[in-house]
Amino acid sequence: MTQSSTDQHGLTRAELLALPASVDVVTAGRAFAIGRTTAYALARSGEFPCEVIRAGKSYRVITADLLRVLRVAPDNDDAAGSSHPAAPIENASLTSAN
Image (spheres, one colour):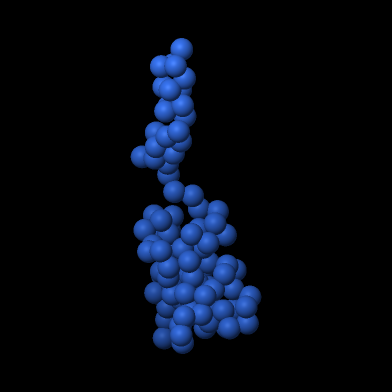
């Protein structure tokens, strides 16, 4: 048995940013370039690199926490103007009051 090249290497930045809100521990393990067996062992022992949530019999990892630990931030090109919407509104109200 051989592992595919995606199992031996971590996820790309684009793949990380495309993940849903939460992922299984195997996918989160792939982000850290660790295999399935090790990922489950770390999750069971409480030593996984980020917080793991137990949901019934399965383990889930919140993608935002995964990205935080990996220090992967989304590009803010689209959100640049909308990240601080209060500033233009405050300035507009100050100008109209004068």
